[in-house]
Image (tube, rainbow, N blue to C red; front, side, top):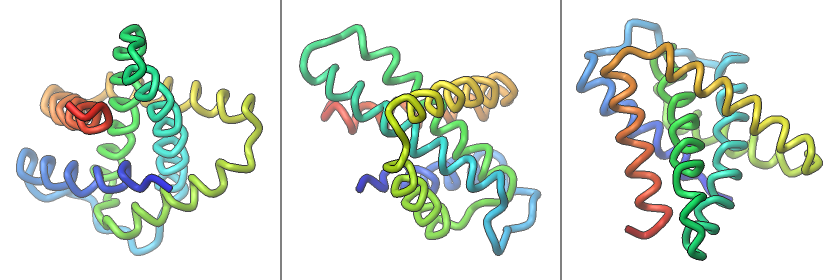
Length: 151
């Protein structure tokens, strides 16, 4: 069980709050369908990132950029959730944990389809972010990659 993506939500929340001030959206007491979807995508993209990180550690440098892309798209979901009021780290961890458990029941083809859809959606979120948001997301993704690769 890897809860590191949810842990990034705290870092992202802190970075965004320092950069942008308090979020304008109210803190949601119950997770929204958008929060649940974001958690599913973070879990799916993290599974892909774990495999890509293993490949990079095994010497396959061609996997380095796809790894950074997957991590960037996952952090984009976290940032979007934060900006829409999901700043509760415990709730974010729980959502990602449940998504990881549910993901285990997917076939490899279903997981690959989810990963592709989530990567596309993460790319869209990133493209729609402002310059400051993109910079924060990219920085956090790079830090996550360095941690995964032990650099």
